[in-house]
Image (tube, rainbow over all chains, first blue to last red; front, side, top):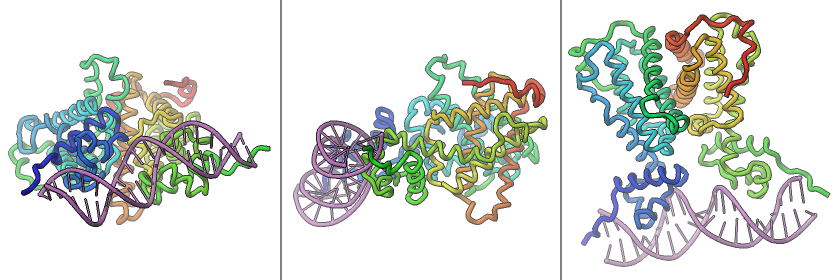
Length: 208
Length: 208
DNA sequence: ACCTGAACACCGTTCAAGT
DNA sequence: ACCTGAACACCGTTCAAGT
């Protein structure tokens, strides 16, 4: 009869993230994860493929945490006003900052890894959609997406490491106001038309 | 009598960068670098401290390559017009892209590492200076610096990995035009005064 | 001053074997 | 199906020793 399952992918990724939080990304190893789970290193390979896959799994978890408070693609909430796309973008930036605070070490993975995972593609498609709704010409959408997301991630990473300790939570909202101002003004030259109406914006297809 | 010196810091860092180019950042190890230099791993420790120092050394080399074609702080060349700061910023972005092309694997280190090295502080001070000259209020300078440099690095990293292979070199200038447009427009709300005159802008002190 | 050699506790991944 | 055990080629870093 088949053995009872001792571990699964979710437990492995959760443990890997814990180790990153405790000991830094360099502490994340197959041996170390297995040790915490009370299991042999080789037991992991049935669930994660290899170490690269393990790190990609951590990235997926972080992306999911970031997108938690962001309005889903179809929702009108936060997207209805002509400038609703800025709100959605700022929700992502806030999510990124919150995750950077919770997992300052692991957060670096978001900037270092190519992010060709399913979750990363999903986030990219989401931002593409936002920019299209904002009236950005299709030929500029991928470029602006890269500029915006990298800038937001970079600011979240920076804000979490420095200065953060000696500031009350509310004060750091300045960063977001600045980012919102910058993005709103910076994107203006690329808007070939005013923001799309909520009604005709919901029937756009997938991209990538 | 003292032994003849077989290796020095420069040779070690050059070799480490070569390995990163050939085998990726994960291939960079004390053992591997020593092997290429025909020397014992422990011979490196007289010159680099430890592995973190080795990676920081690679970052320093990349930063130096990026800043190569950028007008030095005191120079009026590229800074004289009222919008000269954009030219300087774009020169940095171009330098970043060139380095990302030459060292696509090692380039990731620039985004992943905290960059508290001397060279990184120097680059930061340089951009701070540019923004001040552009008339940005002092309270917004560090924030905007983080947004700008992270965005430029992110775009350089992205542009080097994807799409690059199947585009003639000239076409990618679109990316820079877009970044220049975005930055110029985005920064506008933060400019409390028109750009400083070249003459009274040269006598500002260090920061940090 | 600069490098070697042996050593230690780790690491990613394999293979064959157990239940 | 799921995990173990032994094994391999690696890794970062130490210490004492050679020239």
